[in-house]
Image 1 (cartoon, each protein chain N blue to C red):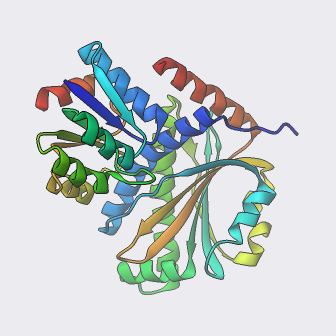
Image 2: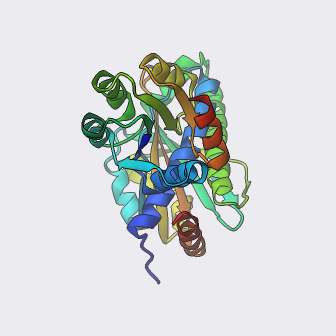
Length: 117
Length: 199
């Protein structure tokens, strides 16, 4: 199983990587700093699960999400965002995300996410 | 005067903490206004107040409603919310307000909810607590912003600059968190601790 963590913040990426490793041990975790990089990685590496931020420079999560699904229809996308407005949640689910989770994510929250997906 | 600067890592951590805090705060305000806010990436800068005042020259609109709220604790300072006259009118229209007094009251309440949620959440992420004074409001002409009492109390500030943006309602505001030297040093230590715990 390969994971892709996408966030423009180093702190957010480190937090996600740490919570994944706490739950799964040493797994392959790729990282991207924006939607553009993430789409490229999806194209080339076909990760199984993507953790995707929404507000990012270059290409945001809203734009990257449908592109990822188009490239790799079996991919599972968990949106991890500070934007907890109902409309934001509804929008990402309609675009094909499996889940919309509020930041920050700790190991316990990650455990719940992995159980669900 | 000692000049503080944030390293790239410190800036990244503060930006992310602010991003999370702002997400929660804007959701509360969005509920209050029954509208959808588009979020932007917060910009973090340490600068002298004189420089901050120079950046206000880039603002659009000739006069602004300017409301502030002091917060105290290990992390202390003042949060400020700017909304220009046009946005304020759109806010009044959206809320169906009838007079200027109601508009002042609405902006104060919006500031109170926005900045206290934002600062409380930000402080919570840094494992500290803050308490608040009542917010105050004034209407200032753009070329008189330098005379605002708030800015005379600070020399060097961390400016956390983000936007409140309700596109459909054409309501747009700017939020600043101003802190003094001792808070900047406390903040730098805390940001590094947070990062070290993850590496």
